[in-house]
Length: 627
View 1 (cartoon, one colour):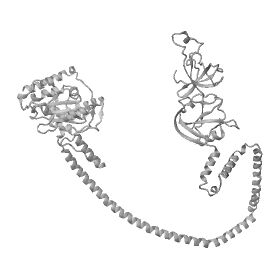
View 2 (view 1 turned 180 degrees about the horizontal axis):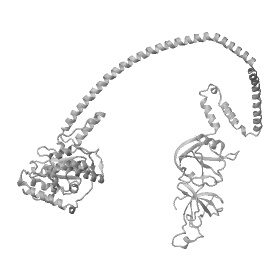
View 3 (view 1 turned 180 degrees about the vertical axis):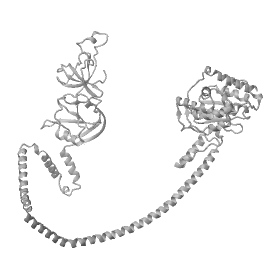
View 4 (view 1 turned 30 degrees about the vertical axis):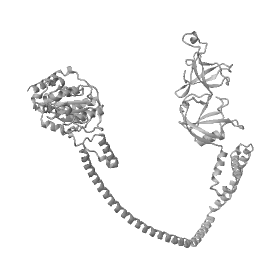
């Protein structure tokens, strides 16, 4: 058994062995009294082979371990007369006192000056108690027996405060006391507090006050000690045996003195209520009041005039001061307005200059290189708050193959993705099954071929759903003669949109990146496309790079077609879209959707579910190449 604490009582004086009867066990930070025959088989006790320093009926906290003589291969384990467990670790119980409702000062007085009287029922010679200061803090207090009254008082010293688990008060008590659970009730050290006797606190206070009080400055240390002793004796006077008689005399004497003061006052009140006496008293009071008014009124009027003269002078001075401050404030406002106008003008000029700077930076070749990225970052830091306006657009690439960032575009899950595809189906003149085939073929890694009109309708809206509206559209032309020309612009030395898409896909494997090779018919297809399809289906291609192309029947060189193209691509033809024209494209483009993106996940195409549409696409491509 490991770290299960029990509370128990010693059965008999050790010889040196004894037994301990289990009374309670720890349950969720508190003690719970219960019959422990199942925990401490067979009769709820543990055997202590050698236990010194304890007495009969003494309480202990202990853990138990399996008796080494018990195992599953002998009859000892089923014997109901022998102990299955022996004591492993034991501790003296420490009482936990609940003073959470009291202030720290009241707790200090209670423990240091007054003392505790009922904590030795658990431990006959306690030297330590745990005092709960709040639900989360407790103090470990050393105590000793007071030589005169026998109560247990705290030693005056620095007291350590620890974190506290108040669940102990929700459990059972023993002999009216709560008992600590080792390593559970008391936690980590927090701070120290100092507890002293009242006389020591008074001595410290007088020592500090003597620097501020004229009388105390003249006293000696012995005189201050005598004063503290007098105050201490006054507080303890009620403990003297003859104080009760003196206190009784003082109460009677107080009543007699009060009566001697009250009775003359009652005589005066009685006389003053008689009408003749009252009338004469009122006349005398009125005469005295008039005489006093005549005497004091001129003096008061003179003092008021004198005080008002000073106040009026101060008022005029304040008015003049306020006027001067007001003029200064107006001048400051004029200066502030001028500075504000200059700042506003400078800000406008700075914004305009940053706009020109963005254009200049946009003309830099390979703006996305590490060197140029570092240059832009340094400019942003140098301009502080205005640096956020620096956002150059790489003008060396056409907008349709630039592939701008999409860090702020939200991701959607599969259920949202399906809902968006269904909504798109109604607008794009395409069936749900055709749209599903296009999506799964593209995301499974196939090289998808579409007619130009279908791509113009589908690709922008599909990109708004899957890639945050980002498409790398690479316009093909007769200058594409080999695979490398698809990576680097011939005669220009700059990367193509295809190259940027490939690099971006490698750097961001959790995002889809869509490449649109626009116009296969404008190239000598058989010179470079076989090499591209070989790379497309190799392990070098990023699996999150989606590649599709458009092809129509206006071939620039019919002698350079590739008859095997249908074997290495997935051509798709959507019937309904043949009827749609420029008007449909305009309608789709003027209703922009909120862009989203779909996290990369591996998908595949179940060709048997789409065999008819796949055959239709193959037939379309064959007819196109055979014209």
